[in-house]
Length: 463
Image 1: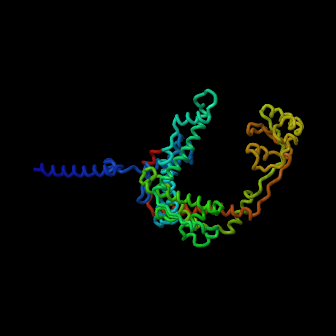
Image 2: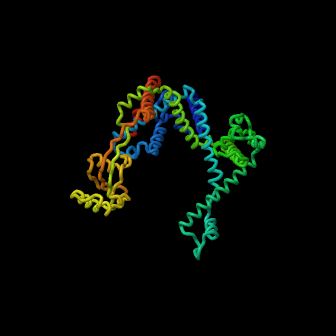
Image 3: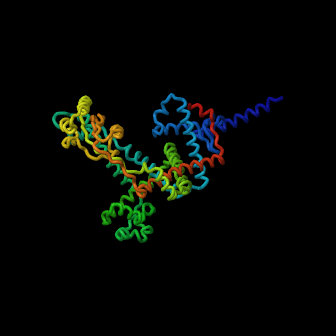
């Protein structure tokens, strides 16, 4: 009785399965498994997901940047790892919140952001173009090396170059072939393009043209794309020359740049998975920076009285460095340094011993170096000198393979710097503190609006 309906349901199921398989095949990156099973995640920020895969990638990038160093990467201390992985996840969540807020505020349409993205992508594509059309096509063969050696370097009966000679030849040949390939490629681009230059505009350009309508005048066209006089004037201003020969060279450079830009943008590099990932990472980074500049920075105000108050409370921070009038005896081994120190402790004459044993240029003055800022003293030596009194001898301190004995002849305490000299520094210090506090407060408010969920079970796998 139920035989035929069951067959119908089975057929429908198989058809659905077949459609899904076809869709998976078209998608390429998807698999049947991924349709039924959700990708593991460590956190959700609103409708955005920080997947486990992305979290792992971010942690690896963190190690590469040496922000947490080997300790996090290699440590067996579970509590250390737990603390840092959680802290880093919180930072990722904050970044996601800033990205969401930036997009909600329309900052992804901000001209500064769009220009930064344009320049980044173009440079990325140009780099790929150079690799494909120049670097990959330059090869130095064994025959090239031997021919170069026989023609320019061979001496005596030796038929083959030494390892050092080979390295020199390969470098020279590679640089030579690189230039040749670049010239060849640039010529091919020019042959394909339609280039027009306007001699009358070029001749009329002077240093003062920048004040007139140089942003409207067209000095050349590359496949209908104009090169404006203002672009050429900027190049000439940088070169500090305005003669006709320099104008032509600068314009030639701008034409070549336009040709390369056009070619790089026409290659479809934006579809390359590796470049797509780099572009996305940069997009996120720059959008967060734009958010901080456009939203948080305008909220920061440092008042004059705050600067004055901070200066009064922290006068010790803002003073000239202490100075010491010192003499030194520098020798090449510890045994000699120890014996000289013992002789000095028994009442030996410092000047005489410096002239006899020191390898420092000050030996001709009996070891007298004179006044030295504490900033210019080695850290270990400064620690001993600070504890010493006028007339004391300290050391020996090892520094740059020398063992140095110091005599403190005099001491001069650094004077407090006037407020006007440190005002900007204090302004920046207070501003940074306020910026950090304001950003933290803004993010706290966002967390109240946007639902944030941490997948504790998944995060625990990293401990």
